[in-house]
Image 1: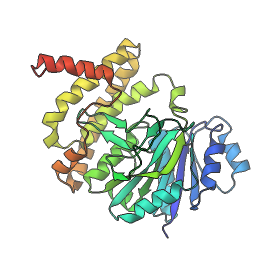
Image 2: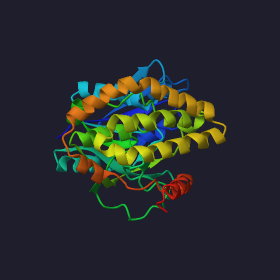
Image 3: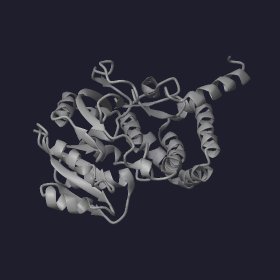
Image 4: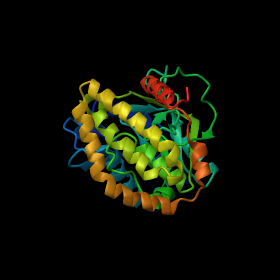
Length: 336
């Protein structure tokens, strides 16, 4: 039987941890649970010490974001000899068979490197994610987000990417392609590792029987301009690291239009400083990410045609402003 660890990144999540950990300790498949505390200032660590003595705690001196937090936990899981590592948000709860169903799906095919869950809102009425898509506009989005829960996403399939909030990762794959990129800090780091997995010839599977329920935005919504800053940094970083040269002629003009549309929308909302800081941070990272791009390119084990087949040839469903901008762009180019 494969050895499994579950890693939960935590930052000031004392209010959410009990329901999260109770659901994980009640799993039908047992696993070693690791909570990585990202420099919390609340009572998280005291809570863990008093009520969850069987949970391993890794205390970081400061908040290293989702990527830094889970990497610390993954490294510990690897030291313990884990074959699979599940990641789980501290503001989520899992069905009793959540982990068992993920492991069963992973065991089916040796080249499956990641398995993701059917993640729903905490009230079980709406979908949060059934896997991540990546568009030819360079924009990722969670498949099904906001839709009412039904049976439309009840087929297990291979998909582009997995949500880091409730997914299972094969340690063999992580050793090959590397862990999460900590320069992302938060947002799209899970899309990045999925993209790197796809390029290296690993598959990402969606398992609808693995059900989790998420308090959407319970952590990041507390930080002003947090999302804008990391979005403007991470979108071009994700694109530049991973998109093959052969797809650039089609994708780069679209990405530029989408990116600047998002940028100026942030400016209009009064968040221009956060947007500028995010863009500036990406510019500083270009030399480093170019070197990483070369490593990823040299590791690529699939055709560009395969990668193109995994992309979504449209904007994200909720991008109404970008759709209007696209229509104006096409008219200027004589396409509409």
